[in-house]
Image (cartoon, rainbow, N blue to C red; front, side, top):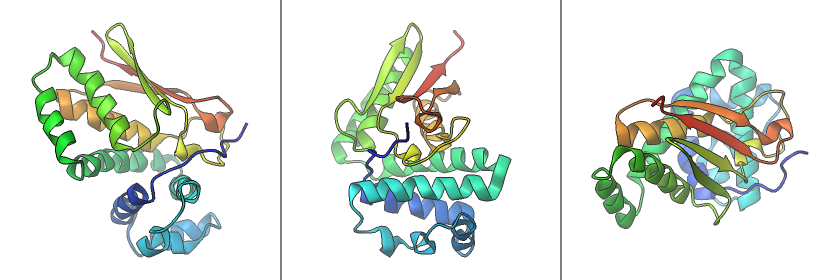
Length: 203
């Protein structure tokens, strides 16, 4: 079943697009989009500024689709790097309240810090309650993305949420200074009901 219900923030899409333009190249992005027969005006921040939530999700997914098609196997690393930079951007543009909480959570025990950081990521992505949930699995974590704008109108034989992977990886590293093993075990692009990420800490 194809995901056609996802939504995304137009403001976050503008921030995401700025990162994509830097990573892919401002002049190259229209070429990347054109190869997938997608609108080249998606490369312009002005064109996405006033999009509705569903159109923003379509554009967010389309940008990632174009990168996967253009770069092939190399796309995974590019998209994860974009996700990492997206986390940095989310944190930089967070509200004063979120920034204050971010400073406080560094004083928590490390095992608790991990989940609190991912809960913060969920809030910064500006989703509705229940659209993304973080569960504790003993010492490990499971992030369940029920909305997944990355998979909007996408079909694939393997998981495609590399940007989300990068977001999770960077959020965990930011709060612990250690890398976690992250695996997308379920993806809506493959027909699953949700996109699920296991975050393993090897303890």
